[in-house]
Length: 218
Ligand SMILES: Nc1ncnc2c1ncn2[C@@H]1O[C@H](COP(=O)(O)OP(=O)(O)OP(=O)(O)O)[C@@H](O)[C@H]1O
Image (cartoon, rainbow, N blue to C red; front, top):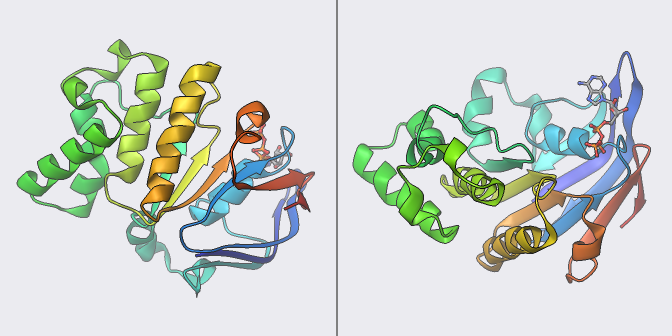
């Protein structure tokens, strides 16, 4: 589902953030991405999300080299990849419902279909009762779950998460990882960048470890 073939990403002003990185994640795999601050985790996820392009090498998604995708195809591609961020990136002036609905509005679904899917996504993350709330009134863990509902609402086959538990205490972090495991259970492919080694060492999933841009452990 996700294949990196000797991928190097060089930022002109900073040098190589990733160097000759190769790995494959099969359809339905769940894996963690670890490494020190600045190791290249976000860069690797941004290459999959097509927010960056590699300097050398290929990123293949479902067998397709995404780096040859023309710019006008990127919005369509992004529906295929749900992204969860540490800081949630919710729109503060919109309700929980509206925040989760955004990817579906962009996709042009009917109002009825949007309502059905948004409520299903909110139900999956246990927040159905908060659909009218403003994000600011929610706890950090609840805001993160809204972010996850938004990432999954368009039912993408791939979910990427960049430090999704960075602001959460251990108990809430475990809840978020348990939620990801549920998506894994229904066949979604997940790659989760995290510093939360205490928790991921208790979970039975593959870990890719970056060190100064090089894949040091798999
Ligand atoms: N847009 C950018 N422009 C220039 N340099 C960048 C850019 N993004 C990342 N870098 C550099 O690339 C390297 C890898 O950064 P990256 O954010 O991918 O690391 P990370 O492992 O996600 O770190 P953290 O755990 O702190 O989020 C760093 O040296 C960083 O300064």
